[in-house]
Length: 110
Image (cartoon, rainbow, N blue to C red; front, top):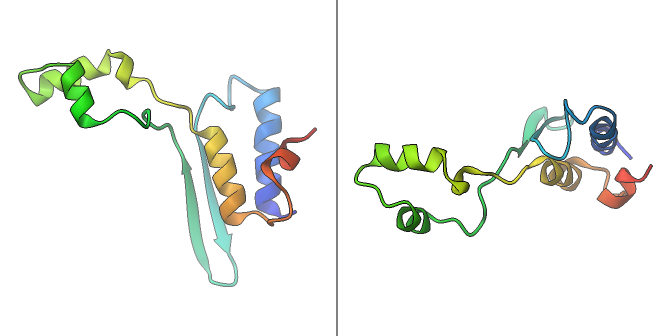
């Protein structure tokens, strides 16, 4: 493996060891420096809104007379709940920067 493979393995181990500090219920971000191209690339594993939620559906379920009212109603609605992004961030890190020799399942094995 490489450093990206190891970073995902360590993140998963820390999720077990310190679940209140890091884990599957949160976000994950990674920076990768490619020495050959001298470029830094990133992975954004932040939370996402549900894939089926569209602005049209949101406006229909939260009728509002103004944008500020819609924003206020959205903040306390079920629609403001996001899907944690850590697991997807780990997978994206392996796909973009990993060695290619290890699957996510292999990296996560104890």
